[in-house]
Image: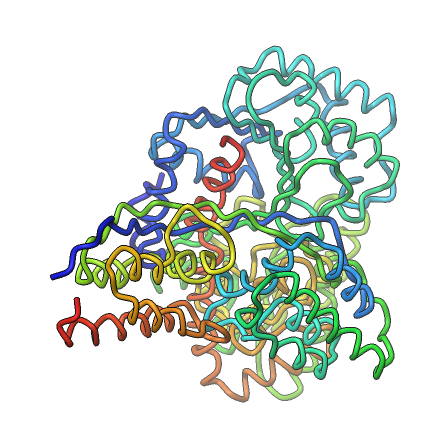
Amino acid sequence: MSRIDDYRRVAGPGAVDFVLRLAEQVQGRRVLHVTGGRLGGGAAETLRATVPILAELGIDARWETTGGDAGYYATARALQAALEGAERGPSEEGLARWADMNRLNGKKLDLGADLISVHDSQPASLVSARSDGRWVWRCHVDCSGARADTWTSFRQFADQFDAAVFPLPGFESRLDIPMFVVPPSIDPFAERNRDLTPREITEILGGLGVARDKPLLVQIGPFARAHDPLGVVDAYRLVKQHHDVRLALAGTADDGPEQLELLTRLREIARDDPDVVVLELPAEAHRQINALQRAATIVLQKSLRAWFDLGPAEAMWKGKPVVGGYTGGLAQQIIPNVTGYTVHSIEGAAFRIRHLLNNPELIPRMGAAGREHVRRSFLITRQLADELALAIHLLR
Amino acid sequence: MRTAAHPLRFAGCVELRQTLDVHAHDERELMSRIAEVPADSVYFHTFGYFLRHHPLTTAYGNDFARWAALEIGDRALAERLAVVDPFAFPRLDALRDHLVAILGDHLQRHAVGGRLEFDRAFHFQRSHIVEVPLGLGAATLAEFRAGLARVDESAIYLHTVETRVRARRVEAFPTWLRDGLGMPELAERFERVDPYLTTLERVRGRLLGFVDEALEDGRG
C-alpha cells in the first residue's frame, strides 16, 4: 500500500504538500464511500488507493459495499447498462426489489458520516435512508444517452442527493442538483503502472508469446465493437504495406454473443497472420498490460465510444505516444500533435502510425510530453486534490 | 528594510468544476448560450483558462476559441475569439457582450455549419475556487520574493488573476505591495503584467524579475 509521501517521487513539485495543506481543512471529518463491490476497476480501483491515503491524512475515511441476492445484482447490472444507453432497461418489479434490498443494506451498514459518496447505480437508492451528512452521487460513466424511462425512474433517487459528480462535462443527464466534474486518474504505484525492469518486461512478453523483434503496436481494451479492434487490424494492415510491424490486441471478453463472435474473428485473423497477436486476458492481468504498454512502440486506443477509459493516460505515463479515437475522455487525455494524435477513421489511424514510424525522433519526444501531461493532469495526487476540494466545498 | 503593516498570507487554490447542463451544438447556440449563462461561466471559460492550461496545451486563449477550432473547425471564428483578451474588459458583462458581438458578426458573414453530436458540443461550466492557505507569509520584500519563488502556481493565479476580477479573502499581490508594504511603483508594475496567452510560470518569472530589480535598487 502506498503512502502519501511515496508520491513525492512521481508527482509534480509541491503537489504532495498541496494535498497535505488541503487535507488540513477536512481533518477529523467522517468521509464514507459506498460501492457495489471492492473488486475490479473504475471506482473500486481508485478507492483502493485513495481511502488509505485519506485516512493517513487524518480524515476518518471508510468504505462500505452493498450486496443482495442474484436478482439484486441482475437488476443493478441492467440499471447500470440502461444508464449507459443499453436498449433494454430493468423491469419496474426488478427496480422495486433492488430498492427494497438497498433498504435492507441501509439498515445493516453504518451510514453515519459527514460526507457520504455513493458510487454508480447499485447502491444509489441508499439515499432514501439518508439522515445526517451531505450525500453525493458519484457517476463514473456517460449517462447522457441513458434510456429515458430508466432515467426517469432512477432520477427519483438521484435528485435526493445534495450533489452529483461526473468524470466529464457532457456525461450528465438532467438533474435538479448541482453537478460537479472530477476526472479520474491513474495510480503510478498500482501493479498496472509501476515501473518494471527490462528483464521483467522481457519475461512477461515471453510468457505472452509476443516477440520483440520489430516495432510493436499495442491496443488494450475489451474485445467489443465500441473499442473497434477490427478497425485496428485494418489500420495495421495499411501500415504493414510500408513497415514491418507487429500488432498486439489484449483485453477481456465477456460471454456475450457479439463479443465471442468478435473474438473468434480476431483469432482467425491472428491464425492467418503471425504478426497479429490476440491476447484474451483476465481482468486482473495488470502486470501483463503494464508490460505490453511498456514494450509498445506506439499505443493505440481507437475506440468509437470510450467513456473515460484511462488507457491513454497509462500509456503516456509509460512514455508512449498514443493514437486514439476522438471520443469521450480520450480526446481529453491526448493533446494532438504533442502527446499523440486523435483520429476519426481507420485511414487516419494508419496515417498517424506511419507518420510516427517514418519520423522516429517524434516517438520519445511525444512520449516525454505525454508523461509530463499525465504528471500534471491525470495522477492520483490531482484527483486527491479535487476530492478534498469537493469535500471542503460541500462541508462548508 | 521595509516591514509591511500586515503580512501577506500566500494561498493556492483548487478549481472545483461544476457542469451547468447547458450545451451548444453550433455557433448560433454558442452565441445565445453565452448571452444567458451566469457570469461565473463566462469567467470560467475565459479567465479560468489560465489556471487549467499549461505549456503543453495549445494556447487558444479561451475555451470558446478552442471549441471553434477543434470541434466546429471554423478557423476564422477561432482566431477572432482567441484574440479576445479578457483582462482588457472592466466587467464580465462587457466581456460577454464582446464575445456575443463577435459571434453575431461572424454569423452574419458565414453560414452556420451542421449541428454537432452531443459529445462534441460545448458544455458550459462554472467553478468554485477553494482557497488553500499554504502556510507561507511575508512581511518584507525579501520574504515576499522567497514565497513567490516557491508557492504552487495556483497561488500565482489566485493572487494575480482571480483577485483582479472576483472578490476573494486573499489579497492581490499589487494591493499588498501598495497598501501593506508601501511600494506603489512596484505594485503598478505587477498590475501591468499581461497574463494573456502565457503561462503562470512565466508570470511568476516576470514578477520575480520586478522584485529582484527592486531589491537590487535597495527599495525593499
